Length: 280
Image 1 (tube, one colour):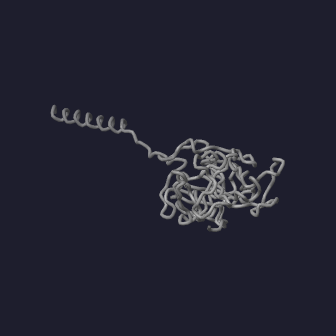
Image 2: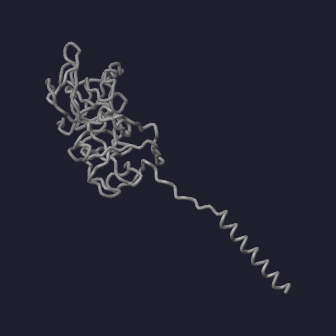
Image 3: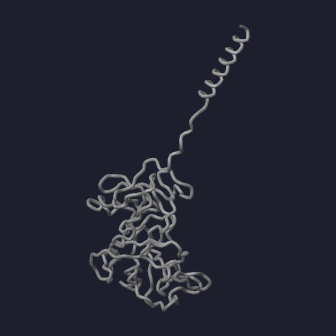
């Protein structure tokens, strides 16, 4: 009898111990994916995606940190917005922002470029929207250059803003041109020779007016060909060239998307640069 009672007590003790262990054990949930992910793509390398791995895009016409994609355009290119933005390692929160669009909706930006989806991407990793219209590009975190499409705005002889066409005559037209990754317009100089800067003074005393431009070209929008770029030495400093033309900024372009240099000292002396630019 005593032996039976002892066994019963041992059994109760073991059951109690197991029950306690089951109660104390906590199920740790899987961490949620970040709102913006840094994904590896076989074609484009590192790209930006959403939580589900759906690709994000830039629009060339958004050169002034405002969306130019509205109405039917927004149906094909839905906007991306997250109020609580969590980021994968390798992304800097300072590069992201939020705009209020003209239709009142909010949209997330990266380095000032609004972010979009493409309606014809059907699965995570699809990049079907890249290069559509030569003005939609997969969103990468580290483009060396960007490709803008906007109205060129110079100044008339009285200093008033004046719209110019791609032929540098007064008129309304959207023109393609290269910018820095943050939207600063890039120019060439008509008096330069092939791979030869004929503007910059040896002491760089005029560099503030037309600063020489240089960056490592290794991550480009798909419309640009890396083989068209080169580097020259300008009095000990490197300058990037495109099709043999040395590249510059304009010192009086103070706002994102400015291209006032097109009319200095007269229209077309300092043209913007795009894939139609001829080789020297």
